[in-house]
Amino acid sequence: MKKLCRYLSPLLIAALVLGSLPVAAAPASPGSGLVTTQDALNAERTQGDRERIHEILARDDVQEQLVAQGVDPAEVEARVAALSDAEAAQMADQLEQLPAGASVVGALFAVFVILLVTDILGLTNVFPFTR
Picture (tube, rainbow, N blue to C red):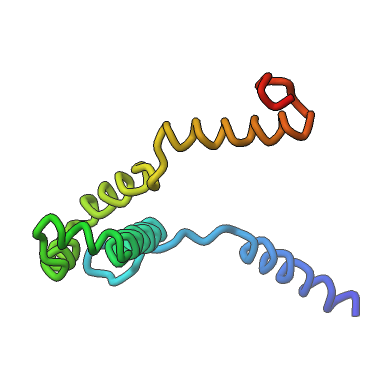
């Protein structure tokens, strides 16, 4: 048994050491058909950008405004489909930054209503006409 362990131990040690070494991935060449992680993430992000654009364009109020401006919604869909990936990402970012129907007047009105309610409940003392 000691003789077997003497021969088997170095083999097992070598197998464990070689098995624990990191294996380098094959470099992705243009014709290899391998998809890198970055390519997969970019494709997913691009698809998400295009879906956001289509969601916004599918809303009824947007469709009404397009028709009111004299733009055919089918033409808009065709132009969105023709956008490059970079243009779609830029358009999705711009659509995200647009205000969602809110304005400064609306925000001020909301603050006024909140202060009025808290003043009526006696939590604040902002408006003298609530006493």
